Image (cartoon, rainbow, N blue to C red; front, side, top):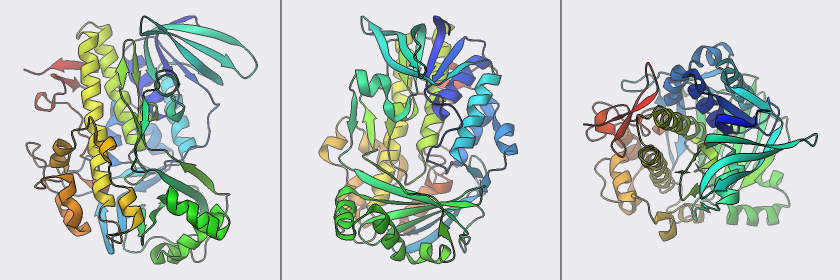
Length: 462
């Protein structure tokens, strides 16, 4: 293990591997420390089409294509008492398809790609803490499972340590959980499920339940169907007390969801169930002297619109460009930080608004679940919700005026062009254009925008 590295990345998931690969491509010295040994299990299998351009920039598209993941050509919703399909091959989409991935495979491919780009990767190394000198991140203190300990100094850090949040959550304690989306997810994997009728090939299925939550159904290339139940903690706790177990809650809810029960009629659950809760949070700051927080280390919203991997790789691209620009002295570090904070927080807030708007048209106007997902005053502090909402739901005046929006109205609105963005709606799965890469001067964040080639860099808007 080297004692110093120009750039250190903690975490080898999509955020860490993407950022490391992008920086190594440009000739920088990059070391990546990953706690686990890959491949390792992770949930979050449904990817958005807007990830394909990022895979192209980092040179990993062909590797992912060859693996044989299910091609996801759209999404199917049975939500709020209505049903509709979204196809990714409509005009204005960033790509005509995406992938449904086994994350153990997908993440391993990205980590191997980072190695091939020249990143020094160490697996089985846990970063215990980050040393701060006068508020600046300077070194990582680490240990291995066989008892070795040490530290690695760096000039620049990307903390992509996921929910663990070595720097932001543990040390800086800058993570705050949303009052809304305090939900519980329960999921497992099924064999022998039918395909979704009237849905695009490889589509994710999203099904709302009367009053108390929703399901995802994701077809995977190993022949399994990932099926997850999301409900609020209050309802989940009551149901588990009444039925006796999380398994009983899960199977009872499937029985209440006719479209899902139909495709699972001849299927069998082949794994145990996994349960996670309180997974919706955001850091007060996404960067600071010597460091950037990327992916789940910075924030996680909600599984509803499959945005976790997108935010991870989106933030990886932004942080890599920010560090590259700083090292090459094209921008001052403080300017790069303002760009990253502005671009990343805008992306997160747009998703926050859209997910909240989606939950507002959940089954049952007065349902507890629907109310539980509403943004509280604390959630709204420091957020530009009015601006974000106008950027997403064109023509609406305020988040709270969306109370009577129907699924059909929301679907039509999401397909409309955004003001000043040309002929590009939000696109497939409701999200493919909501996180536009700031690659033009009119899309600048804090006065800077991305140039993706031939070098990844930040340019000033004129």
